[in-house]
Structures are given as C-alpha cells and as structure tokens.
Length: 174
Image 1 (cartoon, one colour):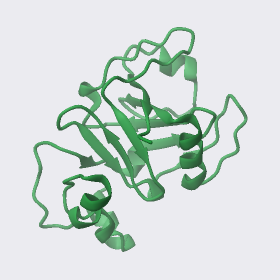
Image 2: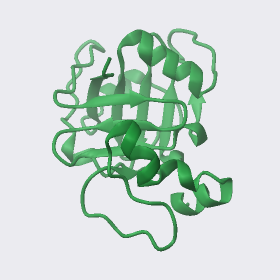
Image 3: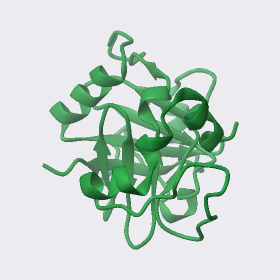
C-alpha cells in the first residue's frame, strides 16, 4: 500500500506535510503526494498496516519492515523486563505517532489509520488510538518493538526472546 496515496484518498494529505509537522514537532518530514522527493535520511512515514498498537499499563507499538530497524538496539529482555531504549523517544498523538532516534533516525506513523488492540496478558480492552495515547501518557512512554513481520498472535515470551526483535522502552517527552 502506498501511504502517500492513502493519505490523499482519505483527505489527510495536509496532515503529513512539512508545513503541518514542522511547527508541532520540529520535523522536516517528507511531503505527501506523487511528486514528493525521495529522502535518504530523516523521519519517514511508516505504512500503518506495518504497525500494531497494543494497549496496556505499558503500551506497546509493534513495527514491521521499519526503516529504523537496524538503528534500534537488539532487544535483550530477561524475565520480560524490557530495557530503556537509550537515545530514543516517542511522541504519541492521536493522528501521528513520532518515534525519534539519535541523529537522522526516526519515523512517523499515521496513527489514526493504525490498528489498536487490547493487551492479551492484562485484559485491557481494545479501544481507539486516543485510549492508546492515554495509556502511553500514564506510563510515561511506550515499548517499541521492531520485527521482521507482525505476529499473528501476541505471544510476548516469543517476541521478547526471538533474538531478532529490536527496540525497548521509549520515554515520551513531558
């Protein structure tokens, strides 16, 4: 799926333009549209179909085929304790979720179009992006895991011990 085309079809093209993002996030994000330049670095849009937002006391954002995958630290979680992802932060908002890393590493998820599910382990009800953002605000951030592909079922033990997952807990700026 072409994210730029999706934004145009849904009438959200202006929401991801540099003019809309710069004042709010200080980002120089790629413009939406068929004539938009291809960028070599900086924040990029990740197709919402390659994400899964999982609600819970500590919310989780799962990423698949993320361009920042290799820049994230290899996840070494023991006893399901997820380490802090040094140098990274997350800005969870209803329409856009920004994952910001060191240097030019980062990505933007069109959050309003992304799937949100309840946490399987803690019985959190499924809800919308507003509920996930509230969970992230309460937790002071979220766990961001980058994977080769999104899992069909949420098996945290398998995800955390896969040896291929990257990421960790990312704080949300106050």
